Image 1 (cartoon, rainbow, N blue to C red):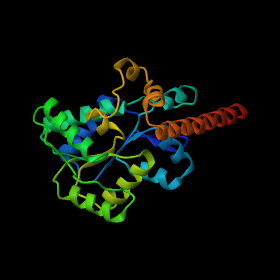
Image 2: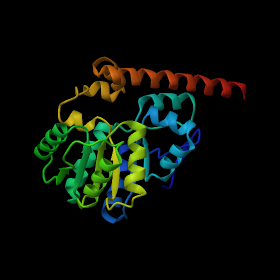
Image 3: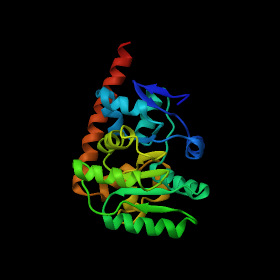
Image 4: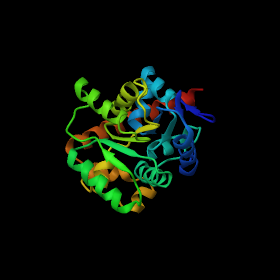
Length: 252
């Protein structure tokens, strides 16, 4: 992507939401399949800093949009300064864009009930949205299940595939099964817990908190014990990395 920057070797497309949607709009109309969309959070940033294989996945992606308020704040002290794309809001705008262009959407991941409820809600709130889900319960770490999901996406005639997966693992899954597998879908991206939020299985974060980037605080309060622990571990690792970066910068 023209204009891509590198933040400590991590490739990032420093675009605002309007600019990103413009690029995606053109891709959905005229682009070739398949392409990967990454909404970059702190966990992915850390992994890209220490893992050249994951950094290659980001390098190969069509767009890498910084999603974390932590990355934005960090970049204020360690330039280049990054903009921020709210993943949940951006996913909603993608649904509206697909409806406007008559582009089909397929969603997969989360639970079967969450997908069903999310599809129902989106069809009710967004006119003319053509959306389906990959039905059934499946495990992305299972080869047979992954092959099943891949085949269903390939035969769906969808332009956009939206995944509900776990950060780094989901990006690796998309790259291996959809990008390297050359599956016929214009754009594929992971949006974490978005499907659960659409299905109202996850607490919807108030607009004011989303505007000022305090989603992480709500997650630490309201999410499951397992995810709370994951968030805490990531924040600790990110804090250590930020301190080391600042010390190295001071030494120079």
